[in-house]
Picture: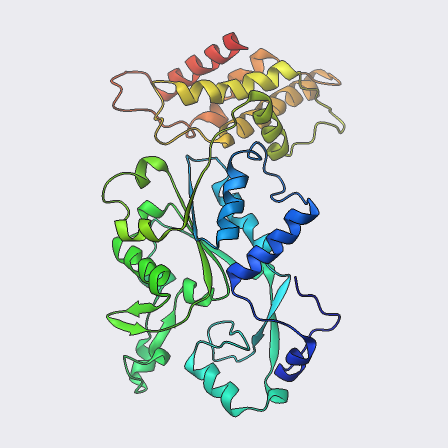
Length: 382
């Protein structure tokens, strides 16, 4: 990880500082190796993946792969993708030209404008600015995403001024070219339009951008991440085979395999204050019931198992249970208030909408009836 006491402001100062250009995958790998050697916590806040998911991510980083996070909803896929940005340098230098739409590597520019500027300008007059790590990650939810959003489009205003269609100056860059030297993530890959998938294939295979049949060759330096649900990803025709073939590593996520681990996750993510003027003390068996509700839902024949049951169900239910106990404590003057089984009667407000019923199962039960049956079974199990 390169650190300088004073940030260089010109290309000449940058060369004298000893800064070395790296690809984003090299940068990620080198900083990851340092963290691994130092015994640091690699993915803060991620619980239950130490022996399963994190080792697979580690191998993918060391191999320099683009990655697909494959799992059902609520399995921390998006959080894991965002946490990868912590292995980037705190900031990197770029050529500070307002009319260049990407953050150009001062030693390896990719746009014609930057190349011409560097070739014709003395190094002590080339301005250098710094791109912080927190801005080098971007993500996009696939449904509704258009080609122009993430790849780019021809800019009609530039054509009107006489710019050729085949010139890179005619392009309006989408998110991926603008994230050159950064990380870009696509959530729910199977929902991405087929035309956009073809554009992504070109980027993964050739690292070039093709817009309306005009190939614009850029040596894009980018780490691309995807997330998907197994049910839709494995369905024939949802993701073009060529794109699947170019994804370096598939990282399989999962729900907590132990109820105690699930309780740790819920308590961490709920972020609810139990002290204060009206404190609440939650018995461990009540925490177990909250988690068991999600466990029962994940095996229920009435719930669509292809969609999954998110950890957010447990988190929302835990907050509702604590809120119900605190409300009673405020009204009756109980200090501390202690959640009871009767508080679970309010969970419909935080559960309905988070369970997708299996409409093909042939049952006539409403969502509320299914939830009541799941809660009753969870109480019995605990």
